[in-house]
Amino acid sequence: MAFQQGLSGLNVFAKALDVVSNNIANASTVGFKSAQAQFADVYAGALNGAGATQVGIGASLPAVMQQFTQGNIATTNNPLDIAINGNGFFRLQKDPLDQSGYYSRNGQFILNKDGFIVNSTNGGFLTGYASPDGVKVDSAGIVPLSVGTAGIEPKQTGWSSILNAAQGGLTIAVNLDNRDEKAVTVAAGSEWTQLMPFAWDSTFNTSMYNYSTSATIYDQSGAAHTLTNYYVRAGDTGVAARQWGVYSVIDNKYLVSNTPIDLEFEANGILVGNPGDNRFELDLSTTVMQDGTSMDLTSDAGLNWFAQSPGVSGNFAFYMNLAETTQFGMAYNPDNIAQDGYTAGTLTRLSVDEAGYVLGNYSNGQTKLMGQAVLAEFTNPNGLQNMGDNLWIETFASGQPTIGTPSAGTRGKLQSGAVEESNTDLTQELVDMIVMQRNYQANAQSIKTQDQILQTLVNLR
Image 1: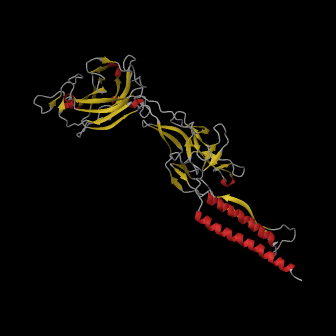
Image 2 (image 1 turned 60 degrees about the vertical axis):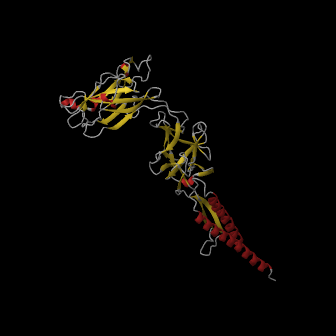
Image 3 (image 1 turned 180 degrees about the vertical axis):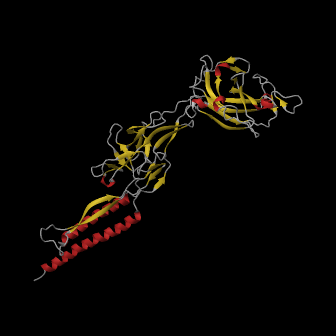
C-alpha cells in the first residue's frame, strides 16, 4: 500500500503548493484573502478489521479555507479608493438593472461615463442608499450609487440652507467700540467729534459714520454682490450714546433705505430686547442711488436681484440678523458674518466618510450628499463561493447577508483614499513552500523505497 500512500501524499502536497503559490501570486492584489490547505488522513473501511494495528492508506485535501483576517490599509491619491476596516463586504451589481448581489473587499472604485461608482477591476456597480434631495438618504431600497456630473444650481441669499429663515438669510455680528468719541449729536463743550449727517450722495465720506463692515450676498442667478453696513452713533451722552443707526448699501451704489435700522444697547453692551427684535427685513424695492434716483431691485423692471424669500412679507427680499452685535469697550471687530446663498458650482471632487456617505464637493464651496454605501456581513464567510476578479457570491453554506450601513455592528468603518492590501504573509508562505516541497520529496522517496523493496523480492531465486 505504500505506493497508494505515497501517491496520495504527492497529490495533496502538490495541491498545497498550488495554494501557497496562489497566495504568493496575489500578494499585491487589493482585498485578496489568502487560503490555507487543510489535510485529513484516509483509512480503509472495514466491518471488523479495525483495531490498534490499522494502517492508514494516505492523506487527502478535504478543504482549502480562505483566511478572512484584516489586511493592512494603505493610502492612495484616489478619494474613491475605499478600504474596509472590519468584517463587511462591498455589495456590487454587474448591471444597474440586475439585482443579483456580488461581494468584494476590493475598494478600488472610479466613476464610469454615466456617473455610476464602479469597481475598476471587475466593473461591478457599488450599491447603497440614494439621496434624492442631496440632504438625507432614502433607505427604502438598495440601488447602484450614482453621483452624476451636473453642477449645483445657485441659491440666492435668504433661501436658507445653512441658516433658518427665522434666523436671517444674512447674519452680521460686530463689536462697536464704546470708546469711539464720534457721534451725530454732541453736547456743547464736549470733546467728542460731531459726525456729518449721513447723506448717500456724491458728498458721501468717512466723516458720516463711525465704522463699516461688508458681506458678500448672492442674487437668484448666483451673481455675487457686496452689502456694506455703515454704523452711526447717535449721541455722546445718556441713552443716545448707546443708540446706533445702521445704513445698508449694496455694491457701493444702492442705499437700501434713507431710514436707518436702529440698534440700542444696554449699559453692559448687550442689545436691548430679544434676538428676534434685532432681525430686520431688507426692503430692496425702495433702494436709492447716489444721485437720488429710486430703484426697485426686486421688480422685473429693475435689476431683479432678489425674489421674495421664505418668511418675509411684501416686497422685502431677505432677513438681516444683527442680534449678535455688541457695544463693548474694545476695538471694532466683525465677530461673525454668515449667509446662506452661493453661486453656481461644478463638481470638483468626491469623498467618502467612515459611515459610507458619499459627498460631492463643488467649486463654490458647497457639499452635497450623493448617497451612502452599504456593507454586507455573513455568518460564515468561508462558505462564500469565489468567482475570481475579487468577487464572491453567497451560497447555502455562507448564509444570507445582513446588509447595513458602515460603522454599525461589526461590519466595519470605511476609509476614503485608501485600500486594503492582501493579507498574504509572504514570510510565512515562503516557509510553507519549503515545508511542502520537503514533504513532497519525502513522499516521492517513500514510493522509491517501496519500489526497491519490490525489486528485492522479484530478484529472490
